[in-house]
Image (cartoon, rainbow, N blue to C red; front, side):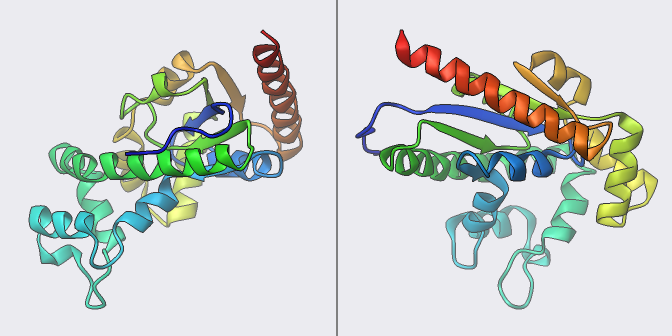
Length: 213
């Protein structure tokens, strides 16, 4: 059981977006002001050699996805799950509860260190029905063509492979509609920085107002 917060419960904001929309860039900017808990980093931790999650993945998908050194072959498994919805759902059932449990431990630790505002960088926030767990949700967005081009370059994918990965997630426009805040990453880095700074001021004012109630 996770211990109770020793300090006042923190304000946890969910940070999400579509693949290759620039969420990591925004997270890096936010990290200069607030602690960030990264779901992808936690996902890497829970599948280290010898972990229960990795054993479950091997049972479900086979030894083909385990490399000779005992680590998960992320690239090979990624190719499978982005083209197979059933496999993707099965992997999420293995991973999500473990990621969520470890994230909660991180939230508690940061809160007990005195942090009032915490960000959770989570790609599949809406896909895992996690929005209600956060004080508010911010979505990083760009145009679909920008998203496709960035993903092809970053991951060295064909157009079809990139489209398969984008379409494996909830449509970005749907995420934007459900967001409390939207940061538009379709222009310049200078404009992005201005938006992030404005967003930081907005949430600081919001949290301050909440604490005064």
